[in-house]
Length: 69
Image (cartoon, rainbow, N blue to C red; front, side):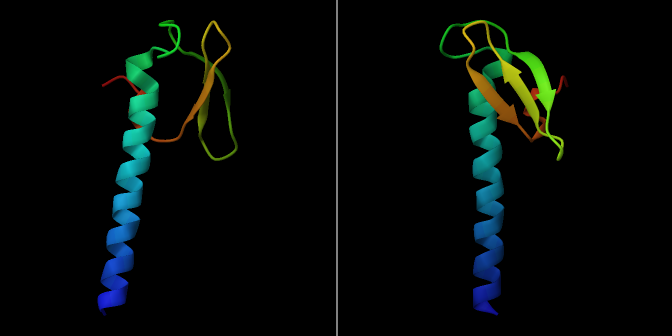
């Protein structure tokens, strides 16, 4: 029972860490490297969204950190 609860806790912490990492990278829609806005360029087969900035940096977002509230 303890192993199952530990695995569930690790899974939840992993999801929270991944979402937080994407939110930090998204940076409110602005590339950290050059300060330009991210522009959507593609979607992957599982719903992830690809963005590129003017300097050609790329990120992929799978959580809803890029959606307007």
